[in-house]
Image (cartoon, rainbow, N blue to C red; front, side):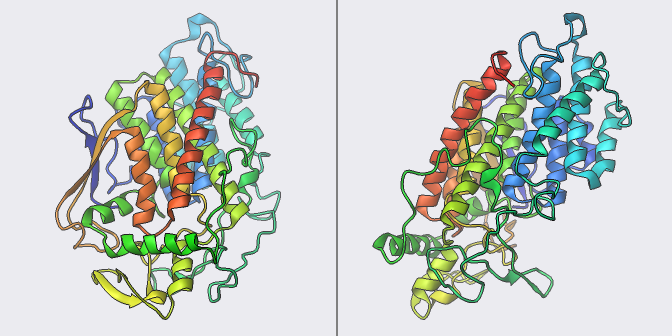
Length: 485
């Protein structure tokens, strides 16, 4: 959502804004800062993500690869930590464990990972390296040098992830990250064959035409996780509501209830957390919250390398869990269910931009979303937003030893993308006393926006919490040197 500035509430130290949601940092801005190199490279990764416009689980994996490479390089300069791929084999003697060496090793690792993930954006990464005083052409593998440590650590992580089932290289099926499992939707954009199943949607491309996106990454439940035994490890204990049973209709009526009663604050919440195209998406949103915590608490490089390692791998595994469920249940989105149940019937709901709440035909109902992104192109159950956010909150709680967050975001009047100039009527400030508050608001935002049912939200939160706890427990074994690569 444009016109959003995040800062600290009175209960947090150092009211520093980690980001302006109305502005995407340019690569040259990333290094022109007092932030440590972990944050600078995190910002470089987030900007690359905004440019690349990848799907949410693919974004989470990219962040995990970058921050795992950085962590593995950093671990060589710690007296206890071990890397995820090479264990303690890169360990450098105490005399070499300087901040300058850590900065250099971490930077080369981040650079190599980003170039592998986003090769067309290499010039932007070269700029960051130059601003930090490093030569990106230095491909040394001499682990007696910081550059060599970074290059070798990154190469090991990259090699492992090239065969993790994500299909980054397009070697399992033509096209990077393309599906190799043969998924075919039961429904098509013009006909609902099964009201319990996901339907591809046709909507405006913003240029006078239409688009019909397919299911993004239906194979993602097969990707090798960081800490889980498999993508199916935390599947919900019950299945989503199925037609013709009563719960199916009740949940659709709940969506219409929200739609008919949307306040400016609820509209702001729906848009603030939407993280649609051109943004850093939900996984990146929580990395920005990690940056807030770093600045709030005055983190060192050592602290931030570990924080972002845990945080990135939490959202990564959360994405695998969510997408495993999305493929397994292939469940209907609210927009399809409402159209199926109420076509030809009168419903009271939000009637579209600037039209407020009216009585409309159920077939005309749309979620509170931009017309160019009516609903994300993948099944409903479980909510990715809820899973990513709950997992991120768990890691931030574990790292800081407290649920206290103390952040707030002020959304400027008229800055809506759905109803620009009108919503909100006045500035609206969202505030979160705790990380849990923020995660829960991210979850319910999808119900306000007409994107998810209550079951999808709550089971997403459950899965995310379980993922976050398991990822953090695994991360600790790397920090204390007890993990086996």
